[in-house]
Amino acid sequence: MELITTICILPLSGIRCSLLVRVRTALGRSGRNSQLANLYSEIADASDVDYILGMLERQPGFINAVKRLRLEKQALPVLKKRVMEAADGNRSFNYENEWLRSAVDAMPPDEQEAFIGSYWTKFQRSRNRSNNDWELRERAQLLAGFGCVPAFRYAVEAAMRQDRNNYLQRLLALSACPSMEEFVVWFRDNRDNLVFDSEEGIYKAAPAPSAPAQK
Image (cartoon, rainbow, N blue to C red; front, side, top):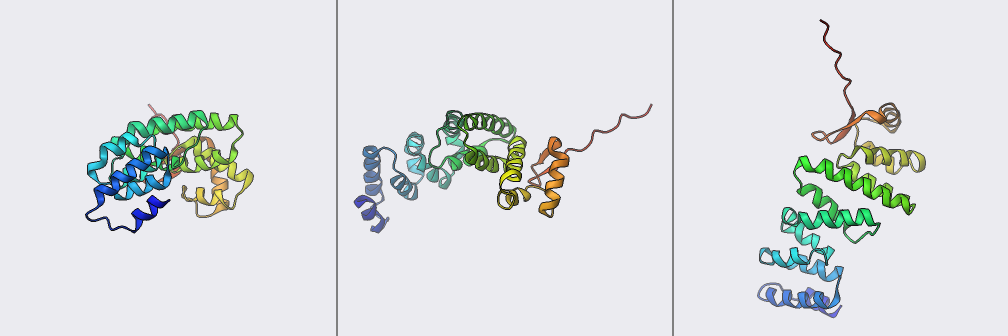
């Protein structure tokens, strides 16, 4: 705490290198440390990219530096590996949602759907084993915003069973329905026929297939 307090009251101009060295040394001694990782993320710049990427898996709080310095694409292999391990192994870690958001945002569109679907399948399987319904509901809400249809269905059905006035209100925004009552009816009518419109950012009923042309 003494190091953090001292650094926070010192001006950054002229002593930045000294501060970075001291924080790096402290991080090396302390292992994972969210406070120091956040501090380093605030004072790091482009010259620190290699260190940030090299230490990212050990210091999850460096995701703040990754976002501030726009290193998401460079960090993508580490981000994908770590969030998939957490999904499959039932071991959450600090900043996991930020890692997941950053990973998805850094992917080209044609990779996002497959990654999100695989992540949700693993996450749901592992949390079902531990009966962790709360974490399932929270993660389903997050993934629903990315366009994951199975997660959206899970989130809506869980909200309808347990807490319509909280979770369901957030999910309403992912549809074109003007009211909660209409949303519930719409979902029940179209549950197995949903698609995500990425341009509008909402779920819709898939259009009915066209009838074959008469000969």
